[in-house]
Length: 286
Image 1 (tube, helix red, strand yellow):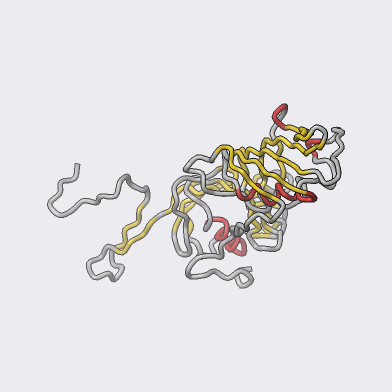
Image 2 (cartoon, one colour):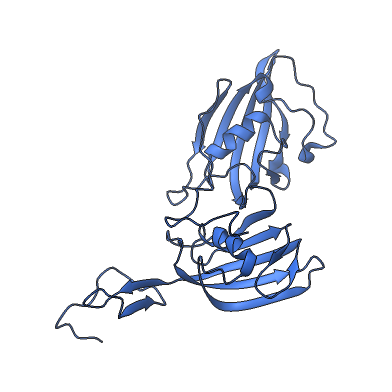
């Protein structure tokens, strides 16, 4: 498996997807901006939760007529890229950030739906031919999902977001929690505070999966791996259909602090400190 998915000295491939401009026929107007701390955007494959109000144009009298609103009930959850919403929303929602409220105006097939969405089952409405659509969308949240091995056999879902900006890279050491469930939900393995070095192959043929999961994670992030291929996590038990929860607790920073820079004295940061100043000669420790 390691040969099929070789590691890169400089890290791993970028698993995010590029954002493309909206096509003619779909326009966006921001009604409420997201918070300044919200810069991530959902991508194809992510599980998205939104509130939305859908309207279509009529000519007599000329106005937009509402035909569905989730505001009267629970938010609508769906997976981007699976055709569960109008094509224009599939293109528009990946331009949004958490907490953003936007209005999308769509023409023709961009706003129409092949059939009623799950949230609209049982509703009856008729859309005039050539109508323009208006969707007011609030992006509440999403769970990021990534196809780690690009073949659908291991899907990573971010269950809890991490903190900070740092992510581990190849040959860096981390502290993680690991929980592996069998298809019948039996716990096969559960370990807390496990020290692991990316690229060490300590998880057997599952090491490439663990490494690719960790490289995009932040401290305190929790990820769920749905593993359909047979994997051995280093305990001799090789099974498929595993549910693996990985919690990244710490990212250790190691530094050569020897005078000769010959690695005779290595500093390992166990817990990250506060601020940026470090003690200098003649300073007193307190």
